[in-house]
Length: 337
Image 1 (cartoon, rainbow, N blue to C red):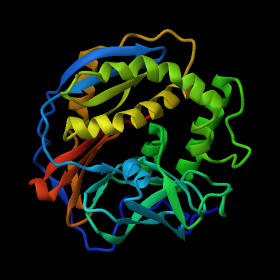
Image 2 (cartoon, helix red, strand yellow):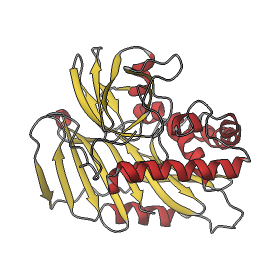
Image 3 (cartoon, rainbow, N blue to C red):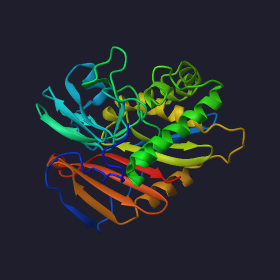
Image 4 (tube, rainbow, N blue to C red):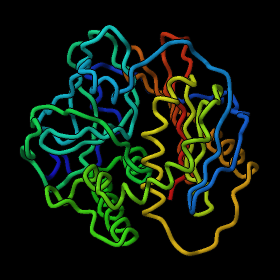
C-alpha cells in the first residue's frame, strides 16, 4: 500500500490538530555527566548501563502494558501515516517513538514520544507503515484496531523516521533488515502470512532463537540495580544510540522490549570482523557531542514538548513534560549511519 503523501511527511505534524510553536533554543541541554557501568558484551552487541537519580516520581503505563490491560485503544484510520489513540484509564500512558503496533490494515511504527492523558478521548498520532505489502485484515486480527505492541523497531527504522522523515526510507530499511536477518540466521525471516511485516520477522522462530542468547546474557545486568535509568548501545564496536529515562521504574518496564530490539539489530549487523573494544570515554564523547547542536523546540501537545538537536553526525531528542516543569521523560541519542 502506498502512502497518501509520496513526499516525506513532516515529523510530528500528524500528532494532534492543535497549533504548535517551533523555536530555536539557545540554552543547552543540562549536560549529561551520567555515571556508567560496563561494558557488557555478547558477540557484537555491547551495552553500557546509565546510572542516575530519578527525575520524577510520576508513574506511567507503557503502551505495551496499556494494550495488554485493555486500558487504551489504538485505531486504524485508513491513512498510512496516521492512527488514533484513546486512553480509557485514569493513568497517564507513555508512548515511545519506535513502538510497533500489530494489526489494523498494516502494522505501524509510532513516530514520536508523547503522553496520552487519562480519559483522553480520541487523539490522532503520527506513524509509519512497517508492512508495505498488506492493506487488509490479517488472519483473526481486527483490522479496525491494534491489539498489541510487543516489539520496538530497530534503530535504522527509527532513524529513517526521525531524520529522513520518509515513509519510503522506512520501507527500504525494513527490506534491508529482513534480508540481513535472513542471511545471518540461515533461513528466510519473511513470514508466509505477510512477507513485508517487520513485526512478524522479529517474531520469526530463528530470530527469536538467535536473539535469546543476547537477551539471556545481557538482561541479568539490570537485576538488583535500582538506580539504572538508561543504557548506551554499541554494535560491531561502534556506539550507535542511547536512551535515558526520568525514572528507573519507567526504564525497567521498557528494558525487555528495548533489549529485544537491540538483539535483532545486532543479529542483522553480525559479521566475522574483529572490532575495537568500546570504552567509557568513547561513550561519554558520543553523548556530549550529541547534546551540542542548536536545539529546536516544538509543543507537540499542551502537555508535551519535544526538543531536538541535529547535525550531520547525530540526532538528539528530549521529550519534556510541561506538567513537571519541562522535566524530561526520555532522552534519545542516535548516531546517523
